[in-house]
Image (cartoon, rainbow, N blue to C red; front, side, top):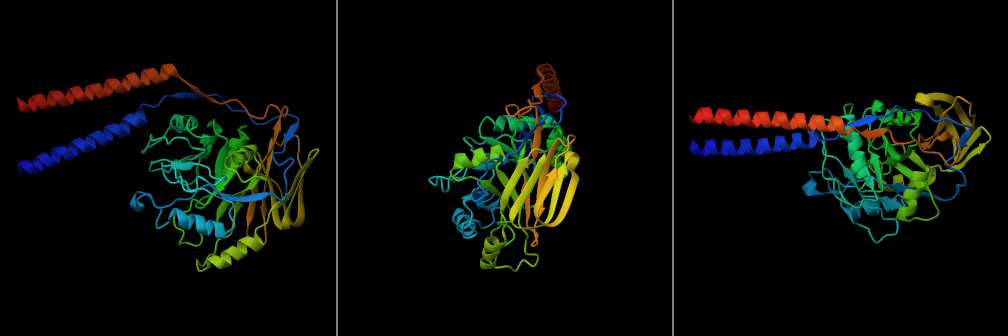
Amino acid sequence: MHILKFIGKVIGIILGLFVALLLGVSLFVPIYDFDEPYPFSGEYLHNPYEGMDSTAWLKCNFHAHSRTAGGIADGRKNTDQLLDSIYRCFGFDHIGISNYNTINEYGKDNPSYVPGYEHGYGIFKIHQLGLGARKVRRIDYPLWQTLSMKQHTLNRMGQQVDLAIPAHPSFVEKGYRPEDFKYLSNYKLLEVLNGYRKSPAHWDMALSNGHLVYLIGGDDTHNMSNINDPANRFTLINSTVNEGDKLLEALVAGKAVGVAFPMDPTYTETIPHKIERLGENLPYITKVDLCGDTLRVAATKRISKAEFIGQGGQILLCENDIDEAAYIIKPENQYVRTVLTFADGTELWLNPITRHENPDNLYHPRLDHLNYWKTAVLWIAYIAVIGAVVLLVRRRKKTINS
């Protein structure tokens, strides 16, 4: 009986310490104030694809998981070698392995290697990809996250990686919310296309509020034995050089296209057949020209549907069954992005044309400001509450013992 009581006390202490740790990392976060955003404006229309080489598209995936921690992190039976070999069979030029909270060094001698990882432990899947990672951020907020918590993570990760990227923002309803992206700043890319979710509402919220954020697509593959996991959502980067730093530069410059490649609904497709489909059916962009206020877009295949999308995700124009899509950008259009759909269901998502005062002033200032007074008052309140609880517990123990 005494042994059971002792074990109960030990378990209680462990659980108490665990709860205290969760509360500590969650409560002691600085409070940010956020300026009101303002949309893109000005006479200058910025085309991120200006000067692109239409023959130089590199097929890249930056989001994939291999088996770690005995499979707890849901990498199934994916080995680094298996991921690499299958993606190379599919014709990929860059294969990024982004395991949870650890930098994978497989292939680090390859010129295209980009050190990266996926950050996040929380139950609401508020995760971030860290590309060009120098160090892993160990702290996360596992139960709930305020806007200040989400901003603080991006700020801290930004000190340890080249690019901190909100991942699969629409994965869980209580995770990243579209309205978060009205105010979040200090990031340059958003994973709009993911193997589990598309997140156009989050992207349009950011763009509608003047955040120059470009897209990235990632498979987020966990199970290579599922034919629909690899080569489902990925990124085509316009670059003549397949080197890690050049790939990141091109992504930040917006010289990339997100790909949503159609899945096999029967799950019976073979790898050779998918290799064939990717080789024969995958279209590439050949033109994104801006002549005055007229945007013209073309690809290597005939376009089944072209959608031009603007402020608030509104469809400005939809054209069907065309060789070349065109849209005259109106003065009230603050940005225009394009989605092309092809006969087999493949979608190419383009980065937006955006309005600015001049080409030297593309980025708006950050909106977040650390509020030292609110942070200090809140932390003092937390410490006072914790102190009061400790005193109550000690008094109760004395009363019981006496």
